[in-house]
Amino acid sequence: MTELRIAIVGFGKIARDQHLSAIAAVPGATLTAIASRNASLPGLPHFATIEELLEKGPSIDAVSLCTPPQVRRSQAAAALAAGKHVMLEKPPGMGVAELDPLIAMAAEAKRTLFATWHSRHAPAVEPAREWLTARRIKSVHISWKEDVRVWHPGQSWIWEPGGLGVFDPGINALSILTKILPKPVFVTAAELAFPANCQAPIAASLTLTDIDGLPVTAEFDFRQTGPQSWDILVETEQGRMTLSGGGRHMAIEGKTVAEAPDEEYRELYRRFVALAATGASDVDLAPLRLVADAFLLGKRTVVEPFVD
Image 1 (cartoon, rainbow, N blue to C red):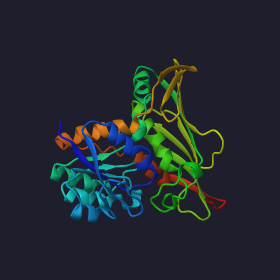
Image 2: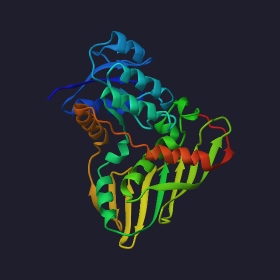
Image 3: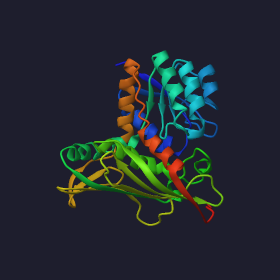
């Protein structure tokens, strides 16, 4: 198997916590360099920017963009123009329309553009999708609540335009939702709570449905303390299915039916290696469209300022 030589661009918390170990564990993937203004890894070539990496760095085949979404479009364009395959951390960008030129560039260059949704690869997500396929769904409720100070300490970009705020984790739930339901859903109403000193919401409530009128609700909150919740409850005519732990655990009427160790990011890199072998792309924008529509339709309220 030909090794896919990968450079990580943006070496912050998510790259250190998830991408490093995933690349090391996946056959056919090799970490070759790091591009980051603020961090490096002993033993690997390091560059301050992607431009410096592409101009002066070692031979690479691909880049994995782990930078904030506000800068990913230009970085992806530079990498594709240089003939590299591109993996985009979620969300794939700070807007929907900016992805279209990248998709066209990748197709013209016969290079892979992979917009990743890591939560779709949680171990119980596919069993949940299969279970729901044969059943009539009555309603869906998402409760996705976590402490931003624990999971995003000091990450000011998340509160800026394009940073998504609470939708940064909330889009994980929407990526699972759009994977497990048999029909597309769309937003019909939203309420967004903005801290007085921030440009992105700290909490959100969404109402969604599908073409048949399925009731779907979602509650996202960055102010959760104590136990964190990453749960999706689906009521069917054959009982309640619960996905908890961000898609790692599935239960029917409280009885566990699917659970396994977390290999979400390993699955992403297995997929990236396979896509790059043929130059195919995988860019599903459904979760990002739902977030964009929530901003379009959302009733906004101002809440107390956020202090990290």
